Amino acid sequence: MTDRIITYAEAIREAIGQVMETDDSVFMLGEDIGIYGGAFGVSGDLYQRFGKDRILDTPISELGIVGAAVGAALVGMKPIVEIQFSDFTAQAMDQIVNQAAKIHFMLGGELSVPMVLRAPSGSGTGAAAQHSQSLETWFAHVPGLKVVMPSSPYDAKGLLLAALDDPNPVIVLEHKLLYKTSGHVPEEQYRIPIGTSNRVREGDAITIVASGVMVSRSLAAAEELARGGVQVEIVDVRSLSPLDMTPINASIQKTGKVMLVQEAPKHVGFMAEIAAQIAEGPALYSLTEPVKRLCGLDVPIPYAPQLEKSVVPQLEDIVAVALELKAGI
Image (cartoon, rainbow, N blue to C red; front, side, top):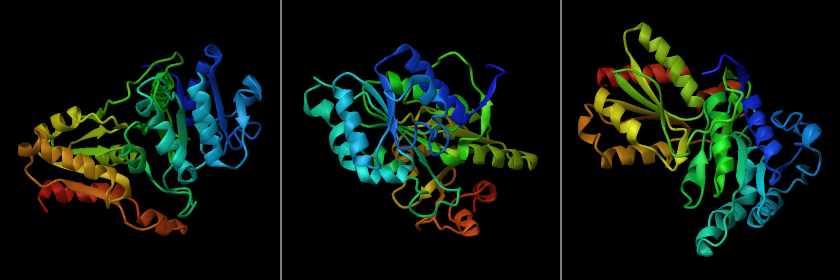
């Protein structure tokens, strides 16, 4: 691992720039990604480096943006779509779900849609109910879409580079609170295979399975738990579709207890799928306690900061539920 430290946003921008320097078929399109530099500053200086023909500022029409990207992908280009907030994919679901995800299958493999769609997701910025949702389960449910959620700057670059290599549409969900976080990232290009979960902390008392911002929150909780003698193991589900259960099952077989943490509402959330696969898999009979889910409440995200924090798991919630699970409560 390199000693170089950059932010999550810089890692994404670096990955895009490196690919665009060597592959003229790659271009980016979205709202305010040009001179403005992107709603969260991710595109930065890419407009100055590559010009208006490859960093395309678009009208405010998500349906049109994604439709243009699907069409471009079908004729050999490699578009990177930036949606300002993942909530706005609702305006483009026909193109994402009925076109991008299905064309390869419906045309018997004759054509592919090598499109990457990036979108900021999650709460914590005071953006209220229509700009703060966690919609990963929508996309993971659709055959033909690959879905990743990088939890660190290192994974942000490696997963995006892998997505840009993929001949299929890939949804990259980037949590807003992670953009300014920093970590070790090599300058050279590297790929993290899509379809791999990652054990990010070793322990023997409890397995915590998390994704996105809940990974760093779980790591912080693990440090607090360790001071009390409870060593938790953490598995980062950085690829939701395809999903890699191997490190999750291996960890449960060691610890005997598992807590599934997500920001999204509990009802029909992605962690319910992981719970089901645990029940159907080799780790079931290693469990000494029932599977525990710690999730967001089944409510829209409030605007008021104190209410916003109260409806999604925080560090202290992870600690409290882990201690309950350890005690068999």
